[in-house]
Image (tube, rainbow, N blue to C red; front, side, top):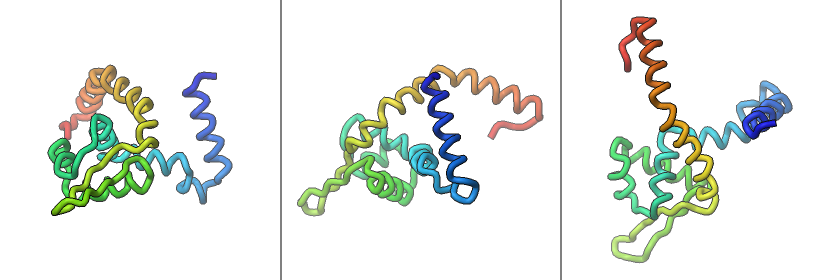
Length: 139
């Protein structure tokens, strides 16, 4: 059985064991919700290159609001994917780093990034066909 088939089977089995009333609390879905949100992957990839301060992250991801940046950093820290280091300067300097758990996510993320890069033209062409068939204007 391939790795993908194995993962799909494990996920399906887990969902069936939980039942409909608990599937929203599935451990796999809980983790995927974190790394699959709009900003987490971008921040993890930024911190994979080097530790950064809040303002550096904000410049690296300019379309994120400061409020969302703060919330995403807190969520990633809560999940153990990044660490926050406060230096006793005046004013205090805060730096964010990728934690070992976050480092372990880089290989799977690299595979997804590689897939997205290789398949973007296929996805773009599919969008054009879909929108053309429906007469939609791209968003």
